[in-house]
Image (cartoon, helix red, strand yellow):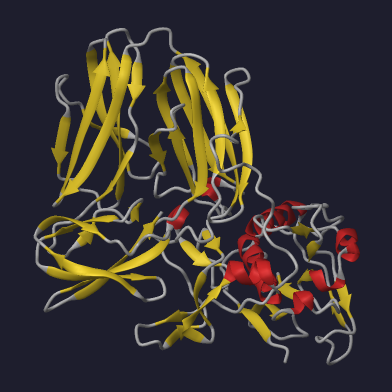
Length: 534
């Protein structure tokens, strides 16, 4: 039985300046791959397929210009970047691919033959049928919005590869929507590709309840890589210190490009700091615009010294990119690059391509041995403390705060001998802190960056952080509550009771990376929070 699925139409109050296509630019995301998805923008006539119940279907070209086509290609290519699959705009690549390993996505203004109300339509599992049955994306019905066209293209391609919708159910297992609309806002606002991602920046493959069951989870990655004649790309950077990719400085800089192909992938990069100085690293996931638009990878970077000791872990939390700004002694160092989870999405499909740019700035003197900032939330206060180990005298220290992950502004100028600062924040969003220290020789240094979210002053129990790197959870509570921890399949992995104050929970059942749910219960209330075990 052939299953037909269509992508629901999201009407947008957006218009674009349109020009007709003269010649579609030729792009290939993975030109040596055998399996192919062809983005066909310039019109096509369909004959002899399951669509042709009423004769030939003549599909006109899109009215997209080449800049829009390029952006759509780049977005779709990044969705499929982890796989040994070629996304192409070249019909010649499509025509030489195996019949049972190729798909034409007809992007067209012609939708009248099918009827209105759908942004796209496809037959489930048709990628391997071997009869060139295409799928469709109706660009005019999507108001020529390039983001939504790209979302629809990846979504329909997913259907042809055997995927059904990622759906939403309530606690009683009643379907709320055939689509999972995701969660969150901003750069890390997330939705499944096989749900509805039109209004979210971070759209990913997912493991979750699908159209036919709230208890049977569809594992998107497993379906894609086992049922369609292709699997993952070959790993491009080794996961061990011994085999780490060497990144030599050239004119004080190095650049490394890579792909996180699997959620177990760890790319190890080695560099040699030539002398004492400042080391800066910009770790940027592939994107098509500001705010890491179109990225599929939430980057996490860990820095190690030559003794293989972890120096720090860098993950801004509310951003998809990461950055390092620190002072290092001369010697060999290592970077571990991997996909991370955040408060909305697990690391299940935090996959894709990235670029690292390292920069070295030499310092003649060595006034500083250690500059480390620590932070903890206690009740409704943020408690910051720091260590300064230096030969020179401190002449100024400034605590700085950022609420957008990028723009730090002064928060306080502690006295020169102070090494702590406690205050009640007025913000309700996540806060990031760093310490700027200036010495009497005129040199200025920055500490590591720490992230805290406002706990609030109500009586509910709350997680101190939604990201954990071990089995230990920190929970603040102003009352006595029972807690239950569930994995994403609903299985109870831990339970216990909270005391008033700061609780440290050793949850031995959260050994695997991924998303979990903690449920708080007392005689009057029940509520839940999500967290990510990295």
